[in-house]
Length: 374
Image (cartoon, rainbow, N blue to C red; front, side, top):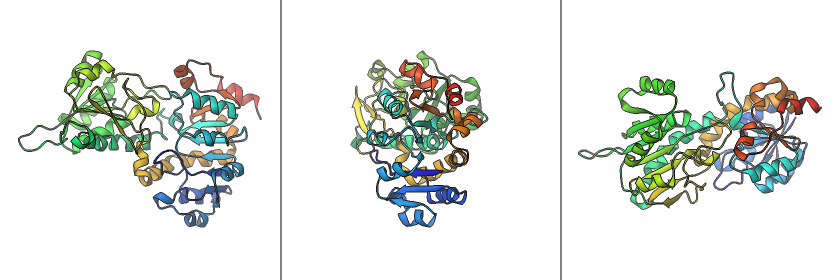
């Protein structure tokens, strides 16, 4: 199969879809790989590394899209990239379509097959291609929150660890999944007082056994959330409904009760955010203030540590890329139910039920469409 790796063009996005090591594996299995020049340069993967791994380096994205059948990216395609997609292309990347109907419409119009990393599953029903970035985003969330609490960023001037004779900051983590667990780990390590809320008692029991009295676990109710938000210095929004828009748990009226200069790091922003007041920001301008509360809502947080993120992501995605390349897209989807769960658009139709629910539109049945085509 002919596989293309364009350079990411989203603001401050330096990750790359395939590393030179991944390219070498694909070439070893008989596939052709086309990489846009400078695609990995910012994180130490030069054109020479790709050439020595067997890739062909091309001058621009148009050449890469023109040469390839399978496009492997990191972030959702920007409009100028969607314009390069045709019905002959398969796009394999993070999509996060639920809160962005405009992108959904563009992908449908392109006729391309699009497979979303974030809804591909494993045999235990987990999200193996989302997990590595969730781990990194959870760890980064506390770093970003600690910085945002500083006066220079508009925060209330609180140190997470406190100081001798001075109390540590109160950190509230909403959601006890991969992001939340990693955020708790870092917040504990930095000496904060940590509370986690979730609706799964089974998960709260696991965390209680894991962290003991280093954290407080709370079953998530509206009353409990109201109370905790009033006391929190830093709130980590780590809520996930796979493939769907994140629920708006933090309302504008909540902000009126929060401490002035407290911080919300909304890691759920890729799926629309779990705060009513959240809007996507960039690494260039990561912060804004609403009702006296600092918001950090960068939609590609792991992009700030792009080398670590790229390596972690490739460890997870490469087996699926190899499978698509070996079998072809249609056969790989038919033979692997976990990969099929990532299929979002196909031959000009929306096939993701989760996106359809969030956007209040209809989705075609994946298997029925695949069975019709050859």
